Length: 229
Image (cartoon, rainbow, N blue to C red; front, side):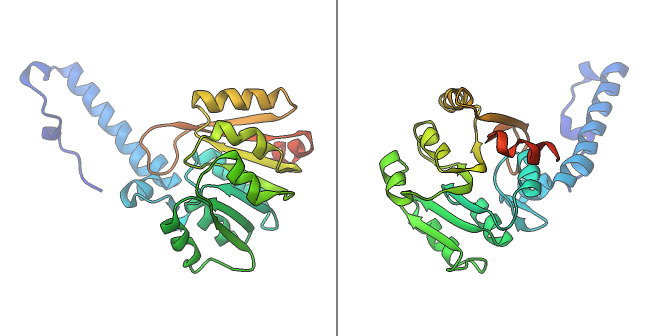
């Protein structure tokens, strides 16, 4: 970690007043505390430096940290997972040993996933689709139902959100990343009118130096499991 020096702040003589210096020192100490304690403990420093969503060099989803922690506690390794859009979350689920179906548009990323040491042909299906639209996705899923469905692709998440909710088991959850976006927020509000409940996790996550929101949607059957955590 680089050491901050006072000259790095380029303070002009007009700013060299006792109160100003005191405030500057306080700001430096606060930032140093965040970097060396809170951000280090969450693994954010590691992800910022490596530009990868990892924790102790192991892949984690690119969601907010609080949502990852909850999912890691309530979702068993026996759960069946569907994700729209592959990524580090795919490696995370594969590493846990979950059954996984991933619909992905990027052929190069499919090669990365299927050649990873965690890939198990008996448990993991990485399916190439040309578009993340409703027709392309529904053609692949037919009557399949999953314990966890993840709406985290590069396409129009709002357009497929209500359909994906129908692919969630009675005791399952729907994970919706970047849910602060206006079209996504409106679809989530519409689902909540259909007896879905939502936990919203707004905060920091891997790599990015800004906060965003990951929403976990669930129904009454799943409520007790979540509230125990």
